[in-house]
Image 1 (cartoon, rainbow, N blue to C red):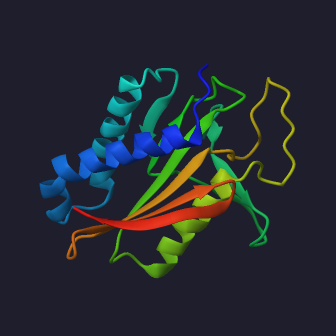
Image 2: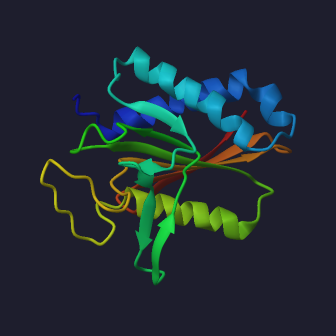
Amino acid sequence: MKNIKDTELMEIFEKASRTFLKEEKELILSGVNERCWYHPFADYLKEEMAYRNIDEYYVDTEYNRNNGKLKTMFDAEQQIKVIKITCDVIVHSRGKNKEQDNLICIEMKKSTADENKKEADKRRMQILTKDSFDDIWSYDGKTLPEHVCRYKLGVYYEINLKAQMVYVEYYKKGSKMLKYEVEF
């Protein structure tokens, strides 16, 4: 499988975001539930990946399986044991690439959403982009970790309908690495 650099993943996301905001502006501003955004955004991600000949990864919305079991994450810092998860949009190999299964995880929110839910989504991006769920990574080339981790890029994507602005945070290796706003 092709080794995909973090910068390329960011470029893929940025292109998909620009296309989504341009092509789906009417849908976004109509006030529909944010879940209605996931599939169109996933389509633009998939198109950009195909353009770059990245065909060994899938773009899924609300995907919740890991080797047939429910996907879970482990938050040791919050003294929370196991949490079932479903990200809004993900790019992954569906377990086929044991070395780098997970590429991009995205959480989308309206700016009017509850602050606790926004913070929970941001925390999810930190956890899912860590190199391991317990700070120990044992890679044998045959098995995936028990809990989901090692996404190369996490994105928190918040849309302000009234201001027609998008607030974006990028996460890598468990930390926020970049944030910005863009008009649409």
